[in-house]
Length: 573
Image (cartoon, rainbow, N blue to C red; front, side, top):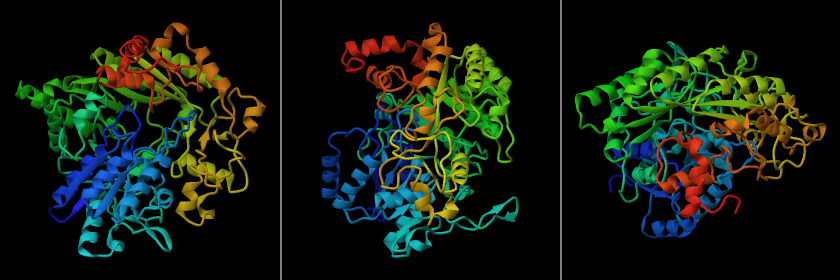
C-alpha cells in the first residue's frame, strides 16, 4: 500500500476521447514518492458514471482525490458549451462518497483556478504543472503537516480561497518580483519533473489505458517541454503553464515515446505550447529518435507517426528534414493571420515584438510538402481591428498556400488571465461594456471589472464564466468592425452570422473539401468544433488513426461509411 492511496479521476465525458496525459504524469511522480495511485476514468462511462464511482468508493479509501479539468468549455465561440457544470456534478458525487480531500488541476482548471475551487467546493487546487505540488500535498496529509506549508497550493479556507506563496525564484541571476496573490505569469519550471520518464501504460486496471484511447481514435500526447516564453494576447498557456520553458530530458522523452510505440500506440502528438519555440531542444529530440531508428531496425520507433504543433518560425530546412526522418506525418501551424498590422500586439514575444511574417508560413508549408509531410494552417478571425477587407486578404493568401487543410475560426473565448482578457476588463473598468463582447446566454450588457476592483481572484475569474446570478455566461469577443448590423452589435447575445456567411462566400465551393469553416447551429455538419463531432466520432469508430485533420478531405465518404455501418446516425438526426 505504500504511504497511502491517491485516486485520480478523469471527469471528461466528451468524445472523441482524449487520453488524460496529466494523470500519467501525476501517477509517475506519486508512485516515485511511494504512494499507491489508481485512476477512475469516466470517459468510457458516460452513462453509468455514478455507479462506476459508487463501486470504486465502496471498496477503496483514498487519502486524496485529484480531479483533472482539461477544458472548462469547448473554447468555440459559436457553440459556447461549458463542461464545468458536468464536472461539478461528478465532484459533488465524489464528495458524497468519500471524506477524502479533493484537489483540482489541469490546463483548463489553471485558466481560472480560484473561481473553480470555489465553484466546485473542493479543498485544494493547483495552477500549472501538478506533479511536485500533489506529491507535497499527499505527504502533508499523511504526515499531519499543515497544508499551508505546500508551496504553490491553492487552499479553500474559511477566510476564502488563497494560495500558499511559491518558493523564491530568480530570473537571470536576480530575485524575481514578489509573486502576485493569484500567481499570474510566473515561472513554473520548479513545478515540473524535467529529468524522469513519464510512465505510460495500457490495459492495466485503474490506470490510464493509452492503447484503448488510441484504438478509439485518440492520439497519444507527448510533452517535450513545459511553459511558454511568448505572450500572445489570446493564449492562456504562458500564465497557466508558466513564462519560462522547462525542457524535459531528451532521452527521457524518447524513452516515453518508445514505450508507447511498443504498446502499439504509433500516432503521437506533441502537447507543448508549440514544438518549435525552443528549436534547438526540438532538434536534439528529433536527432535522438532518428539515432535510435537507425541503430536498431527492430526499434518500435521505426513505426512512429509523429504529429506536431508549430508556429511559422523558427522553421528551417534542417528542422523539416529532421521531422521527416523522425517519422513526422503532419505539421499543424497556427499562423492566425496574414497582415502584419493585425499580428502586431497579438502574436508577440515576451517583449511585445512580432516573431514571424506570412513569408514564414509560406516557407513552412513549402518545406513540409517537399519533405512529404501534410500541413494544416489555421487562421483566427475576429481580433480587434478585423474588418471584411482584412478577412478577405487573409482568406485569399491562405488558400493560395495549398496546405493540406486550411482552418478558419471566428471569434475568441476570453479568459481572465490572458493579456486580452485583462485588457477588456480594464477597458470596461466595471462601469461600461466594450463593443464586441458577446455571450450566447447574456441577458444584459457584459461589464467586466479589473482585478483591482474585485474582492479577490475568485470574483475576478468568475465573471468570465458566470453572470451575476451564477448562470453560465461564457465571455467571447468578435471584432465590431465586421459586417454585422446594429441589432447584433447592440445585443450582448448577438450572433456574428453575417461574418460566417461572408467566410463561406470567400472560399470557392470547389475548395470546400480542404477547408474548415465556422458554422452556426444546423448550418452544416462539417464544422471544426471538437466536442461530440459526428465526423470525428466516425473516425474513431471506423479505426482511423492520426491527426483528425489528415482525413478531413475525405470526410463526406467517411461519414457515409460510418452511417452505413451504424457507427453514427444520419447527419441531422
